[in-house]
Length: 123
Image 1: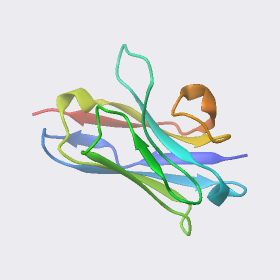
Image 2: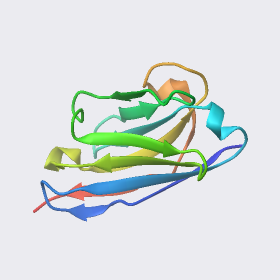
Image 3: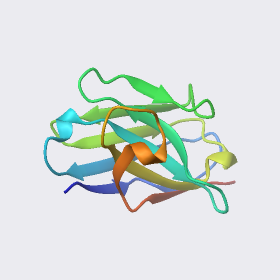
């Protein structure tokens, strides 16, 4: 069983930054990829970024490319999402997820989810 706990969300002005953290617990975490998704009110959940297990390859949605950076600290079992140059359209609940097998950044490729952390970008 994998448990994921996100933190770091909050209210921030446009142009500013936030760093989200995802603390993971469970077996063999270092062997799995992790992803970040977000869901704005009234919209479907969408993939933001993911990072692979061993070689730490990363992938970003076009909407966040160049502004967000995903990383992981295997010693701490923690995945991060550094979000810079935030825009109002980044407002959403952000979810960390554990990828069950190598694949694309789509919901059904992930089997465990955190409870989410809210990010509000507003002046």
